[in-house]
Image (cartoon, rainbow, N blue to C red; front, top):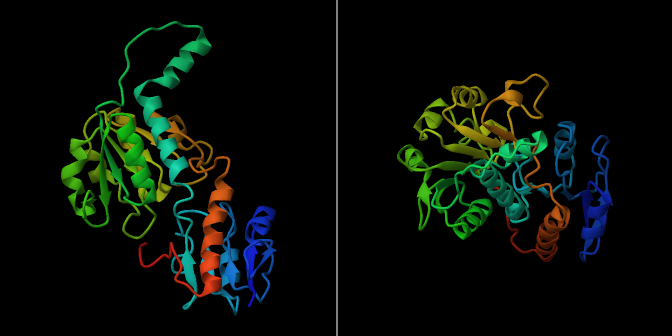
Amino acid sequence: MTITVLVPDDHGVAALGVVPGVRAVRYDSERELPDDAEVLVPPFLGYPDALLDRAAALPKLRLVHTLTAGAERWIGRVSDGVDLAVSRGAHGGSTSEWAMAVLLSIYRELREFDHDHRAGVWRHHQTDTLQGKRILVIGAGDLGRRMRRKLEAFDAEATLVGSTARDGVHGVDELPALLGEHDAVVLMVPLTDGTRGMVDAAFLSSMRDGAVLVNAARGPVVHTDALLAELEAGRLRAALDVTDPEPLPDGHPLWTAPGLLLTPHVAGSVRGQRDRAYGIVAANLRRLVAGEILRNLVTGDY
C-alpha cells in the first residue's frame, strides 16, 4: 500500500519521500489538489483560506498534518473521519529561546544600550536582571516545559499554568491569584475558543506594576486595545512576536507604543525548523503506514 502525501515544497518531497509506503507529491496551494491525496501537509505559514476548502473536498483525505505547533485554522474545518495533527516538539526550543532573548533584552536594556552606541553615547548605569524573577508561563506543553528549563538555568523561578491542574502545573482557574505574584507573564498557549481574548483588561490590570507580558502564542490571545492602554500608561511592558491584526498594518498604534519590543512572527523561524517539523511528520506517517496510533493529534481544544 502506498499513501499519497501532498507537501508544499521540495524540502517536504525529499524529507517524506524516503518514508516507506509514502509517495510525496508537491502541490500548489493556489490550485486544485490531486483527488488521490490521503494526507495534506499545509505550508508553514501564509497560505490562502481556499486551501482549507479544497482540502475538505478531497475524497480520500485521512489526515491533515501541520508543520506548526498550532492548528487553529483547521479546527472545525476538516471533515468527519479526517485526523488533524500538529508538529508539537519541533518549535519549542526556538520559541522558548526567543522568549528568553526578549526577557533578557528588556531586563538588561540591550535596546537602550544599542541606541546609545549608535548615538555615540557612553551611558554607564545599572540595569535589572532576570535572576530571581518570578515568571508565570501560561501553557504547559512542549513550549512551556522548555521555557521552564531555560528560566531555571538563568536562576529565575518559573510557574507553569495549564488548562487543568496537575503535578507541577497550576490550573488556568488559578490565574487571578497568580498574576499579581509574578514579574512577567509568558504566553505559550494554542489559539482556541478558551484562549481567544484571554488577556483582556481584567487580566492585565491584575499584573503587578512594571511587569512584562511576552506573547509567543497567537495575536488574538491578547486584547490589543487593552494592552495598548497599559503600554501607553507606562504601567506594563511587553514583547510581542504575534499581533492582532497580523501582519501589523501601517499606522497601527502598536508600531509606536512605548515599552514594547516587537518582532514579525519569527520566534520559530530559525535554521533547521523545516527539518525538525518534517521529522515529526515523517514519524507520524510511519505510524500511519503501519496502522499505529498517531501522535500529536488535535482533540477538542488540544
